[in-house]
Length: 232
Image (cartoon, rainbow, N blue to C red; front, top):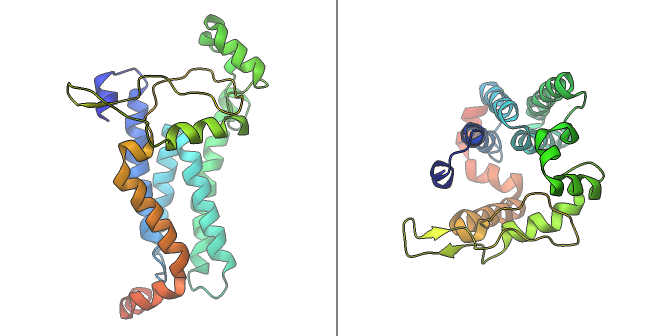
């Protein structure tokens, strides 16, 4: 948020709103994903509203959240022994509805469920590199060919630079590099997650490992009588 405020562009408002909706959606997701605790309908509905808010604000931020909600809901629904399986179907709906709404709106505007006609954007007419990027990537700026470049630039441990003036921490001196032969369109000085958010990065890894190892049964034992009261 500090960097967005230091160099405001007209579409930075979209970044701010999508960040706010994303934080709310993740909070709701964490609440309904408590092991051994059956989610309430109110929490499931609030999750769907937040995911819809993200996807209507910035589709590229909302699609991963919607797909994660659908995947988690399907996983719960298939676990017949888990008493949360009934909530799994509602989670799938909470993720599918925002996807459908987004696809319908995008189809009405661009006759495609999720892509936009980059070849008709004014910047494409001005930028020769944009035209080369579309030509090299079959008319799209998304695809698996960008995965290695994205992973390397966002996870590199040295993706940070310290300077003698406020705020004393800034982006790397050079723009993001291409890996695996991908032809990138526009590249910016990109900070990495481990370098800028080391505590969050380590907590994320630790939480993923702990959740994978413990399982829902361990979560139910830790929950104890509170789960029975909540379910009732």
